[in-house]
Amino acid sequence: MSAQPDGPFGPLIPMPELTPDALRAAVARIAPSRVPALTQHLFEATTNAQQTQSLAPLRAFIHSWAVFVAIERHPQRAARLRELEQLVDAGTQDPTEAITEIRRIREAAEAEAGL
Image (cartoon, rainbow, N blue to C red; front, side, top):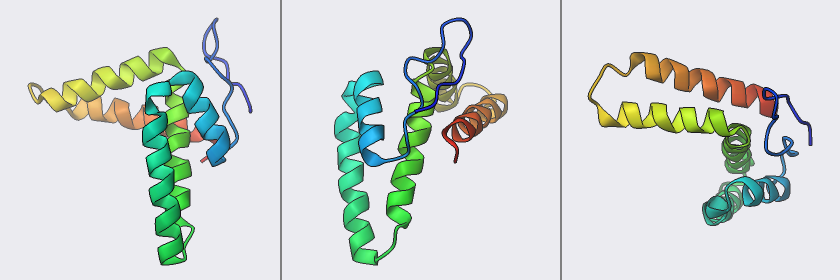
């Protein structure tokens, strides 16, 4: 795992390795309520990988949960993302700026995860 600075307090946990077990352990620490969703996604990805004889479903699983962990390990970033998503979902104002910021948050998380 590699830690990246997050202001004076740092991230909640170091960035885990990009393996199902490491991502599951990280999710269990920072968002335990999401472990069932991760487990279900892994089951579906494994099944799809076997059926299609392709690693693409497993790569998508790793990508999705690595980005989730990279965002959630920084509470302020995670809170801002949820705020922006709610703003877009509400549909009461032009979402252009919010969508741009969401994209920046996700791109930063991808870079942090090494994706």
